[in-house]
Amino acid sequence: MCYEYFGSYAEGLYKMATNKAVFILDNGAYTAKVGFSHSDHPRVIPNCIMKAKSERRRPFVGDQLEDCRDVSGLFYILPFQKGYLVNWDVQKNVWDYIFSKECCPVNFTEAPLIVTEPYFNFPSVQEAMTEIFFEEYECTSLLRINAGDLSCYNYMKKNAGTLCCLLVDSGYSFTHIAPYIKGKKLKQGIIRIDVGGKMLTNHLKEIISYRQLHVMDETHVMNQVKEDACFVSQNFLHDMEIARKRDAENTIARDYVLPDFTTLRRGYVRSIGTADKSSESEQQQILRLNNERFTVPEILFQPSDLGISQMGIPEAICHSISVCPAEAQSHLFANILLTGGCTLFPGFRERVEAEVRSRAPDHVDVRVTLPANPVTYAWQGGASLQQDPEFFNMTVSREEYEEEGHNLCFEKFDI
Amino acid sequence: MATGRESGRLKDANQKRVLDEAARRRRMRKALEALELDNFHDDPHADLVMSKKVPKFQETLESRGGRKKKTRSAEYYKQRFRKTFAQLVEEDQNYNPDPPNYITAQAAPSKVPERHFCAVCGFISNYKCIPCGARYCSVRCLGTHLDTRCLKWTA
Image (tube, each protein chain N blue to C red):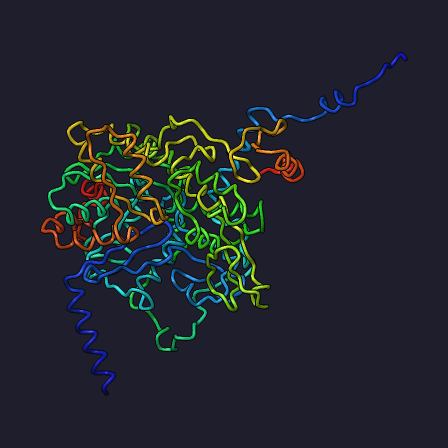
């Protein structure tokens, strides 16, 4: 009896809350950030289907991966390719899971939806997106928007009085630099660098496999190695010199203890020579990381290191600002905002600030902001956009869509 | 006497294959494409048909009952919106031929000179392997490179 009472009470609360709340889906190529606008944080869910060697019975969708004991040799099936939604069957399966009772239950006939898209998203992908949400998920109203617009909105809200914002979004597939002036993006200033977290992980896999241990199949584990051990160098050539040194003089080299999935589920970084001589540590598999720790993130700053003839992030920032109107330029230099998973490398913000500072004119201020959580920043922007009085003018309702179709969506949503 | 003496060194040099500029660029492009791969290995369960319908532990029989609305299968959407990335880019070029668009947003080449790193150890390199053009930094690394990758390895 008691349980039933509690159940219905909770359900009532849930219904009350969801009547006003907006559901926000920041649909990234690596993780989807999902949740209702009234919650404090979104849930961050891998936007993919994975197959494990150890589990033959079923694939793992999204965060079901937590149920998987042994993630060695994980096989990824991704809905995105080069940052754009291409594999709709995969995406549909992941979305079905995310919106289901098991994950983040949502009734789109009641809650409006904000869904994010990359810059310059292709028209047919946009059409497919609109169609699937209105016709399959029966959305009551929809707002499709660039994730960067939400980040910028969040930034303007938190820093009242700022007019401009230069967004750097360094994600899984690529890095975008986008200038916003008075809340509007300047499309001709948007620059894409084709380097993102995926390329860095694959490159790390490649060099470790050649130099030490074959880890080409271990994307999942090597991604963790990258997250745990890599950093952005503040003085690249100097760090190269340190990495050349031997023994105690080399303050960069570290050991990485790889997970074995029986006693250790996630690997960790260990200083050299601190291993205990127990029998346990004899069975551990170790990677010795030296210059790999900083040459890998360095690609974001100088893609030509890998033979990609594109500008690095600081150079692209300055190039993007130079395209903008002269009166906005000093404001843009003073409001550089970093979002996306790659900005989590230690030293990222400092390096961007130092390099942009040295390239910018003397008299302008350069300020680079790294939010507390650069991954969910766009989602948070969506949550505060929902309170904006303009919000419902930005959305397209199902009736409007049924009346006017895709044309209205192309008019209203500025992707 | 009539044949004269042959120089082993010269003969060797003539036989050595040297990759031309185009082949080097091709290899470079292939290496970059490999960095875009989702997986290096093949699907471990490619021969298995996995089904979402396999019951999981937390599910009871009732909860697997009929759904109210008939939803379309993922396969339907795969067929409905089937377009490869290359097709999408091409279509975009017809739809939005004027900048800014996907193609023009790509970052321009850097003005900063390229740096070169040893293909073996990753440190700064000053030399280039003659046959294949890979960078190396020392005789030791060159030896490793010749033994393992030079002209043997195509990424």
